[in-house]
Amino acid sequence: MAHKSPRRTAKVLATLAVVSLGLAACGSSSDDGDSGSGDSAATKIDCAPYEKFGDLKGKEVSVYTTIVAPEDGPHIASYKPFEDCTGVKIKYEGSREMEAQISVRVKGGNAPDIAYLPQPGLLKTLVATGKVIPAPPETEANVDANMPDWKTYGTVDGKFYAAPLGANVKSFVWYSPTAFKDKGYEIPKTWDELLALTDKIATDNPEAKPWCAGIESGDATGWPATDWVEDVMLRTAGAETYDKWVNHEIPFNDPAVATALAEVGKILKNPKYVNGGYGDVKTIASTSFQDAGQPILDGTCFMHRQASFYAANWPEGTNVAEDGDIWAFYLPAKDETTKPVLGAGEVTAAFRDAPEVKAFQTYLASTEWAVERAKTCGTGGCLTANVNVDPTLLKNPIDNLSATMLTDKNATFRFDGSDLMPGAVGAGTFWKGMVNWITGENDKATLDYIENSWPKS
Image (cartoon, rainbow, N blue to C red; front, side):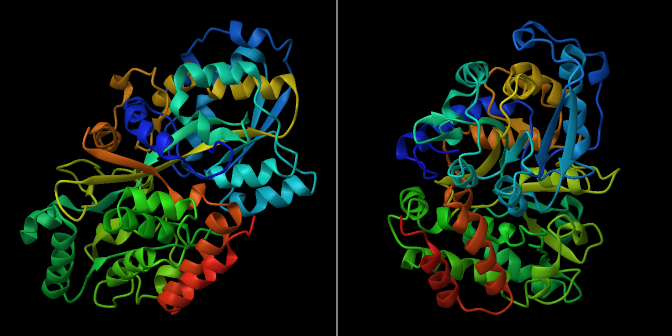
């Protein structure tokens, strides 16, 4: 979601702390949601905004996303009021390979009508093909009214293409409150305390591991490891250097990046600390991100770093609450005086110039859709950038925690760095480089590989 490039400016970043107030509404994320169907069948919305697009009865709009079963259920349910109003049928397709396949499909003439793009950098790459249709005025008006500070992420070279959809918080560590209580472990408040706790857990529990992790995600394998680097980069280098890194104002193999990667390696490449429930360090590369945190439930793992949307991946019946089976704490910073928060979201890009597509794109940018998404949401991952949704609709405790983090006046929010980088890097060599790193490549070679892949223009 970028203005003139997938790289954000300091001004945009500064406004995100304000816009996060609107994130306390429910919506979607790149892998969010729940299988609940809500009560959308009974919902009535104002159909007038869609009547201006003409008679759409019997038309069909295809949607292509990264969100797969069971997380796709709430999204599909949230379309029903629009379908009832217009007579349009929404054809949903979720795929774990979407991020890699969307470019192939667009170039091959098999593009969906609308795609949920998790990376602003990918949007820019697709806009360069000439196949992305600029958003209609009605969609842009909704964005201006509902999520103005996120508009830049759907803008390329001064032209608005894609409305923001969902949002998520990534700076979470999932854990079992019961296990921590039984062992006498306290929630760490600083990075050093987190490392000390990690070492204590390893010492106390020879049959388990402090951490479990997984970065397998089909054609998108590697992305969870990039989140680790980004979160730690914010903590070791600070927001200003993080911005320079994302903008390539410093090289990918800059000492600041090397420091962050080495810090991540203290956990993810330490066989004493990982990979609980699965095996050695290398199993991180072959463990799916959906499965990665599950060993917390059987006690073979104590902690798992993953975003708010991971709430939807716990088995049905799991009590996700501060005093429940599973909860999450903030990934601590270097000290308690700073609070960097990493987050992300998607934008909705259109590839067919048709009234029904424009109407649906407009619906997805509306407050009515965000409210409906809130009703269909169940187990979490329900944040949007919409500032006009009643925060009391936020029923899930992990979403409440996310909103609290995002609205904290002391928090410094930054968008996922890899998502803002050029697609060839952020959704390409950065992912691949982290897989190679997990499976044995050293820090320097990994960073040099990614740096050498950065587009020259």
